[in-house]
Image (cartoon, rainbow, N blue to C red):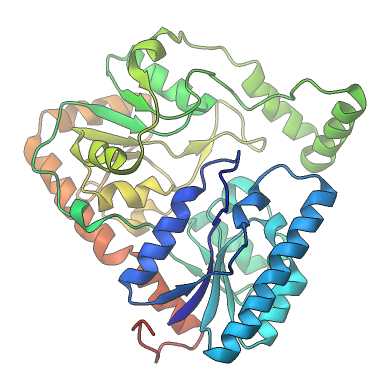
Amino acid sequence: MRIFLSCQQALVRHNAPAYSFWEGYFKHGLEEGRHTWLEAPGVDWAKGLTALTPEARAGWLEETWSRTVAFLRTEHARQPVDFFLSYLFPDQVEPAAVQQIRELGIPCVNFFCDNVREFTRVPKSYQPFDLHWVPEAEALAMYDAAHLKFIHAPMPTWVPPAFRQPAEQENETVIFIGSHDALREELLAEVVERGLRVQVHGSGWSERDALPGPSPQAWPRRLSNQMNFWRRHGLRGYAMQASYRWRKRRPTAWMQELCAPSLMGNDYFRATRESLVTIGINRYPSVRHSFRRPHSYSRLRDIEAPMLGACYLTEQAPGLDQLYELGTEIETYRDAAELVEKTNQLRRDPARRQLLRRQGQRRALGTHSISRSLERIQRELGLAGKNGRRS
């Protein structure tokens, strides 16, 4: 298959939430499935993740999509492109350009992984896509209600072949890897208070941010932002935001001892797989849910950590029982008390840790790979007769 790929590629480093790993995951996953990927030269997709003024965003959309359409028109005439595969946020999409690509005879597929967190309904800019790749179980009703065609498939994750066997040795560390937010801080602080030491690696832990409040601004801009927030989220949104701002804080001295910088590349892979227990946290800050009653959804690490052979203990979330046999492939917890209890049980039971490592890795690599998801996309697009050999 020849697949045009838009997955947050960048020409320069941007001040935006983590995005760069997606390019590697998608490209390596396609190559492993013996597919060819193409990308438009000179296009910086990740720039669309940054805070652009309306005028700058309009210019970025025009330049990005005109280059993309022109490239695809030439490339498709030279040798057919089977489909367009993207990971795009709503304001990165130019619907008219997507329609132009479809008119060339190239189906368009968009993956998005924060539907539950970001949307209450599918954005209008997603309407032109032929197919949507939806990983969260609770988001399926949203796409169904919008009468859009979708597949429910795991997060697109790839790990190097060198890390596809359980680690030969494990250390004594219980680890969580992830950026700071108020809910993660609260959960881990309670865990530490209950006597469990968790080594934390990630960005933002020194700032101890909650749901971010408004930065200092001139009053007209601040008033405009407040009005926009009111229109979008209403009185309930204000109440939910206030539940974060006025929450009672637990002591934070533990952070000085247990929090460390982010891990990257092979250091991240090794730490995930070699730790005694690797923790996942699936709750997330939101103006639709209060600090004391957060919502959760299955995250990327729920695929990535088992692929690496971790002994993985993650927070319960809708759809996890469709991905794994809970208790034999991964383990789950509901709250801080259960997290501590199950970690201590696993600490005392090396045989069960090894079972979780082997079984979880076998399931993740065998069932949840990018290649498997692409096979489903091919079937949905009527391309199942084409093989994956690179042309």
